[in-house]
Image (tube, rainbow, N blue to C red):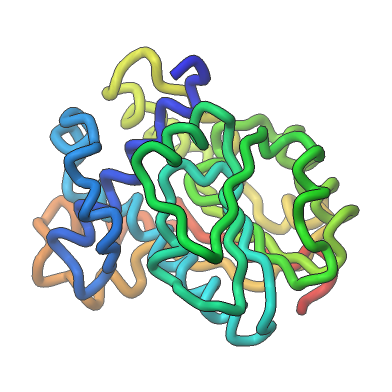
Length: 266
């Protein structure tokens, strides 16, 4: 694809397929599994067990947050920022929620070619950094924005602008995203670079969460380590290197799922 960020969309998709294939007790994604043959082989061969689980873990945690948000708020919007080949609208089939899948036109075109679209899912072809697509959303509903594996591809000023716009236009909203440290982003860039020079570079990291909360003028609802549940549920199935890396990342909070209230907790 012309946009380098779009070129990365098969990385998390392959990770969800891997997790659902080998560890269904932890992560179940039957629609993704059905589309396994659509994944270019290199995305299934290059990644290690740890790297696959690390990518899938963000979806495991954000799925739990989405379910809790729907249960609490009833009729609501779930908006995937930079949706890629996300299949959450099938993993969480709840008639109270409308799932908006927002991504670049070339990505939405690919989605339409290989992914089915269910009756509570809407595709929007646009950059998440614009505000044009805001008018297509019912702003009176409680809204949860989800950005899995997305924000790190942008610069910090772009992230603050995005959050500022979401705060302004969506008065009943929350944001869930994954973030890593400076060291973590260096490791992530090395990992992604192995898939080829057409892959995008990552920039955004959070070294000090309190400072980020203050600058973004948001309220922290939770910050969760990636592998708390995975280590309990899958410890006996993981190889030694995976176990060590999971322990290292959780112990030193190298990667976290951040859950923010943008306009006061709902």
